Length: 481
Figure 1 (tube, helix red, strand yellow):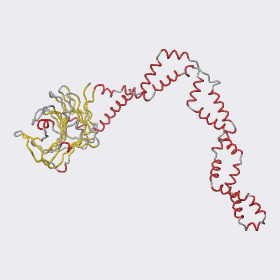
Figure 2 (cartoon, one colour):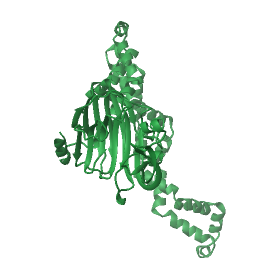
Figure 3 (cartoon, helix red, strand yellow):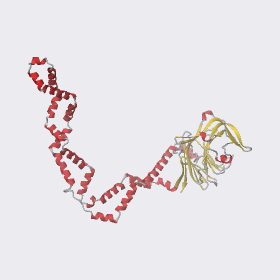
Figure 4 (tube, helix red, strand yellow):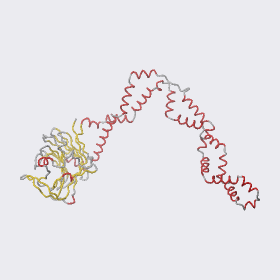
């Protein structure tokens, strides 16, 4: 099985962790969308309307309703009034002028400085005193006066193309009609009727009045229309699609009993203990095993950042304890620190599915592992354990044993996350990586299992490998309903 997996993995035939994550997120969204729909006002309204429309009382009421007529109705009068106004010379002229380039030019001239100057000059030369002064002098003498520049400028400005256009257009019949129409009762009524008769609501009303079917006017008909609209809506189409979706059968068969996404800013010690559970229970402290090069440094070497938990292995001197089978716990000076964590006091399971999205580097001197154990250290079920060239997974039945119930898989890209999964039922275990089965075996498990996550060091570690991170994106557990 592992050979087939390695071949498919190398050929890119195994889905990536990110692809499986996207598939899971889509499934969760489908579930949440369906839940929201089933508790929505829209779906309740759909069922209420269907119950009403199917009732005998509703059907009886439908048969009793009389029709209305379009002829003589207010709607007919509005349409006739609108058509009459639309054909009137005043409204037609208004529509033509309002979009004409001449009006646009005229309005620009009105807003311009040249017209303002012209009107000022016209007022000056047109006043009585100016005319008297001009008439009292001969032309040659007038040229020498202060009035002449004003008079000359006035003659020049009034001959400009814009001023001549302004005079002509301002006095035109079409423009005067346009001015008289602006703000008029006729235009206001025309605009009102235009908007009203063009609306979908009005058109539906006219269509309804012209229809010989009497029921179409009633509130009951509106309820049928509402029901049909809702029944054919995108909402109901999506609801029916989700109700039929086979993917959602997952939630009919499974309970999500653990969904740890590390959304807090630090390790949640209400859910996880940053210690060796059995060692801490027996001695009150965490300790390393004989031959290990690291001291467990508790929560100091655990980081939660961007919804990812990391167990850090670092090069730093610290005093810790090591378990010696002969004399028990003894102090030791360590050159490296790491961390271990468990959830024994908060969560355990005996049957179901455990899966986690993990990432770690491969090296012979560094071991990162996610394992399941009960109150006794063995059997130990390795969801995954890093090796020199890849990962190991399987069952360790007793300490220092070379179990035949173990599988090593090489070739995984250590730069990528992978989803490791165990399915356990009736002491039967199936391991999967990114959804593909890689191993299966069995062992009798008496106690419910909890999780241990750790990184240990064995021998001197190359500096370029440190600090080392064992990254956990999420952990999920399912049990059958």
